[in-house]
Image 1 (tube, rainbow, N blue to C red):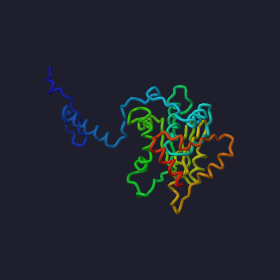
Image 2 (cartoon, rainbow, N blue to C red; image 1 turned 90 degrees about the vertical axis):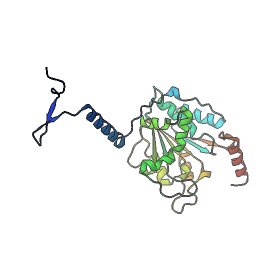
Image 3 (cartoon, rainbow, N blue to C red; image 1 turned 180 degrees about the horizontal axis):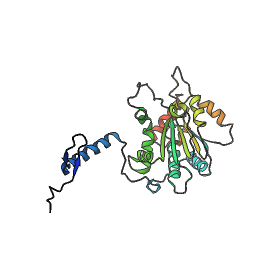
Length: 273
């Protein structure tokens, strides 16, 4: 019987015509490591994290009458809702909560939640952000990451939902030519959008979708812009003429973020700021 060494398989070198010894186990392992490193470096990362499920999400209850009103409108099937008013009232958190509750439900008719936001910076302009389009948009997704972390008690919830195709983030610069079907679309910070952006968003809404518009005209970051102006009030004027539109206006009395936030906003309004 031939020895294991002498019976080792050979493969023919096509260029030289000489038999070449088979690769050793060490060589194969080294190649496998190199290939794995190449894949990890050049291929999209695939998470092994547990899938986000509905029973992982905490339940939220309304803390104010206007929060209860939003839940009433949403639960009765309204599909064009405006949530406007003071900061810290839950006007974005509650729509995200209800949208994910519905998307993750086994008997739901929606495929995903889509958050749309204009890439307008708050306060001072810090210039161009580094990186590609995806990296540039990371900073604008932070509020939704925080909401999802709160709802699911895990810091990667937003990323896992996006990986599963159950959540999507879009900037208003990337809306042309798409149709948002079977989606719950939450348009946030609409006070920072011009008419072209608002018009483009609403005309993207496709079949079997809901649209929730959120904003506060007192937090308008376009107020000092020389080239842009907010179309918040123009949107309100048109939307209120539509029979499908339902509206909730949150006041400082609805602020639930903290007593400090509530008192500050109340006093600012008293002084006319």
